[in-house]
Length: 103
Image 1 (tube, rainbow, N blue to C red):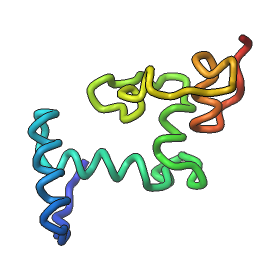
Image 2 (image 1 turned 180 degrees about the vertical axis):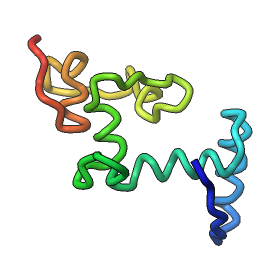
Image 3 (image 1 turned 135 degrees about the vertical axis):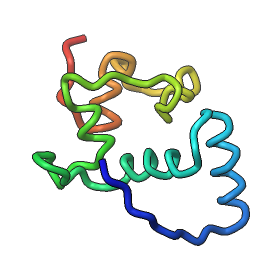
């Protein structure tokens, strides 16, 4: 993929947080920004449903595999209480709108 240089101005605190996260993950700051953009921007790149975000597209595609080092929701396991009895099985439904699975 061809890259284009983009300049972004960040407040000091955000730049430091980005720098820390990049170091924690062993990635460049640019790669962390690229991955974050993939999460929040509509898919719209060649065949994707532009009405879905990249997170929705990734999690709703059958061939998607979770990367435990970068998935932001994996750190929440065990911290969320819910009245839904099928949250463990149907978390993709509640987070991304995927069809419910049989409990």
